[in-house]
Amino acid sequence: MDTTVPDWTDQAEKRLIEAAIPLAPTLGWNPGLVAKAAEAAGLSPGECDLVSPSGARDLAALFSRRHDAAALAAVAPLDPAALKMRERIRVAVEAWLDAADADNAATKRWAAFLALPANAPLGLRLGWESADALWRWAGDTATDENHYSKRVILGAILLTALGIRLGSGREAASAYLGRRIENVMRFEAFKAKIKTGGLAESLAAGLGRLRYGRG
Image (tube, rainbow, N blue to C red):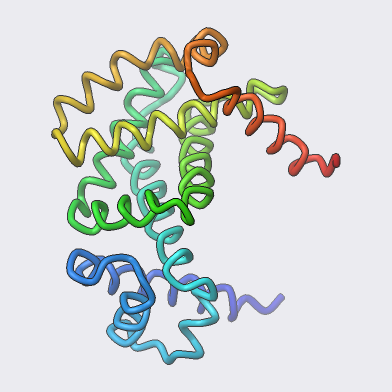
């Protein structure tokens, strides 16, 4: 099987996002950032379109997945089985927050980009993806609606904790996370307390339909 294209794509994505990070604090997340990052990465406009066809949104997704990968690399030396589940989630979330905070200035502009109403669906999807990666590392094996509910809830906590970390610092974010860990473990009770008009349940059901192809 020819693996040339996937290998090139992976490398081009890495070059593009690494070039974007130092530019993002000044330019923000927009088409201008994509163009400047592509130029800095040595990618032609056509090559940039191949790896980032949706422009800044694709770049935002690459940035999020960079943090997911960094968090998983940070917790890789740990044995999840040696920790209680709540401890696994806490160290995984802290590792993710550390990864995002390592790119602090770029992450702030990224968060502002995702906070735009038009980008809210992307933010929810990326939060869910990050939560999924952390739950999988923690050894979560749920296959029923709990699989989706846990990820919806943890995704929301990740994004909220990140906002606190960026705005108020590590200590405040850690305190917030500490208050929520038990809620994550008891997500059914937590869902009942969230005033979102059934957001967790509706997202979980929608994700289930997408995954299993039920209309």
